[in-house]
Image 1 (cartoon, rainbow, N blue to C red):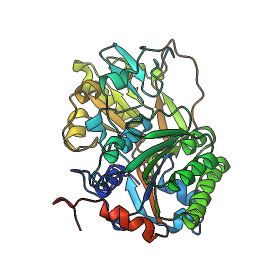
Image 2 (image 1 turned 180 degrees about the vertical axis):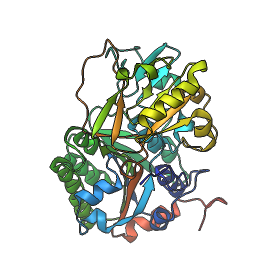
Image 3 (image 1 turned 45 degrees about the vertical axis):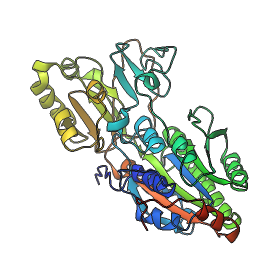
Length: 403
């Protein structure tokens, strides 16, 4: 089943509900299933964003009696493209990819005249650094929501962020903590929730994605990771007070059965201005002006059963990358065509100076339900009068607040 991003019910709308709770203005629709729980005014809000764990992965790996499955309120969609570079920044900012400009894992920057892998700041073909500073942060800077939460009219809210080593999250008036294991992550959550102040904790956890890429989406390793998270969240929800857990994912993954090498189709490569970018299941093409009709015909003949080819005009018209005011850089990064996977296949372009890398067993970026549908679980704990009354009294009523 194919699923397209729904920007009225997506991971961006999860962030909109958090912003609404802290009385921060937003033009994005919020989610009633989160708003109705947050209306009870919890002292601690814990938002856990899992990387790579879609709704179907949860259903395959967890039993109906697990805490997360029992508290599942439905699903939301990822953004487009549903890849870490785009979706993770959307979860940090509440902006769509069309607004923050990070459209894929690899993107061509005219400032350097090079293709750059956003997560590593390396040339994906030579594996060499492209600049001393992170080029994506320099060209497309963004601010996460932590500063707005710390400055909200509720007052006295301390943001925290937790992530494994290697995931960079700007502090922006928050405290960042590194956790290498789920046990350490939940130990930090327990200690933060026990402090004598209102807290917001943002957890970015990409362990499911790494395990799925190495072992497959239905592997025992992935199942054990999700099982440990579900069991620990369930245990904490029974021991902590005045705390609400919101758990979702930024993007999902699906098992890959075959990787097509574009290099073995020289007729298609001859139509291109430069190597493709973005990723293996959402692929961005800059095409020679006088070869566009040839490219459409050749791509359709070779890949129409596995990929949906769309022109830049159609992508922007359908608002696949998001609504709202577009960043001007989108016209630099978005090519003439994009191809989105609709099956279990992937595309690969291997440059002459690129070392061989074994293919991942699972990938992201397509329009399948495995990749686009994200779980949404909301678990509230027991509330105490000690914290609820001071929290409510700290709020200054505004005309924009909804009852």
